[in-house]
Image 1: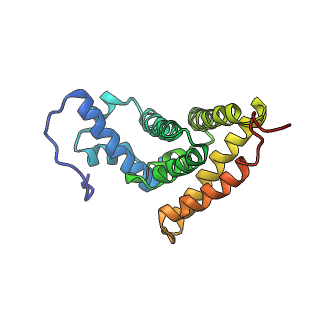
Image 2: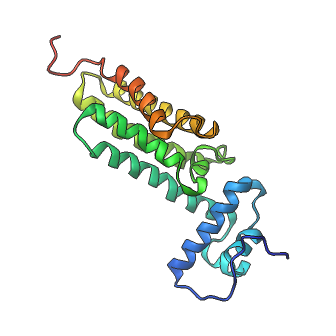
Amino acid sequence: MTATPDARPRGTRLPRMARRRQLLGAAQEVFVAQGYHAAAMDEIAERAGVSKPVLYQHFPGKLELYLALLDEHAEALVTTVRDALASTTDNKMRVQASMQAFYDFVAGDGEAYRLVFESDLRNVAQVRARVERANHKCAEMIAKVIQEDTRASVDEAYLLGIGLVGMAEVSARYWLSQQKAIPKETAENVIARLAWRGISGFPRPTDPA
């Protein structure tokens, strides 16, 4: 087999966790570039600079490898949103930080967002469940803040949380697809202003009935 241009040299022994990290990095490059179905374990092994048996020692199949990557990046998104919500007690700034979290994720190195938001395996139950779980966690965290600071019911707050997650994701992906036609900070601010004008209209518990 002819090595791909980005294939790494073979022969270096690595600790197990370092090897796993290397394999995941190579797999991400291949999955992002080609999608799940066109990606081949041979190419991933070649790109990582290992033999196929070494790759299979760590991951029994292509789906398991893909799911490991998906778990990692879906959790990274959840963590980014959690940190954004915890970064301030000012609700307007919380909205700003939450929108920024999605733009940061989409603009991150390696286009990992494609595994979460644009997977060609969304019809596979294991993949769909992981993506839905990440969206649910993000919406739930946002909804908790909304419910604490407004008169919205649990169901209303969750619906608002889902709406904000969708707004952030779709607008961030669109911004990126337009080759960043406007600066990232400007795009974040535009969407944050839109979101805040909606959320700030909900009565707070201290407001007159």
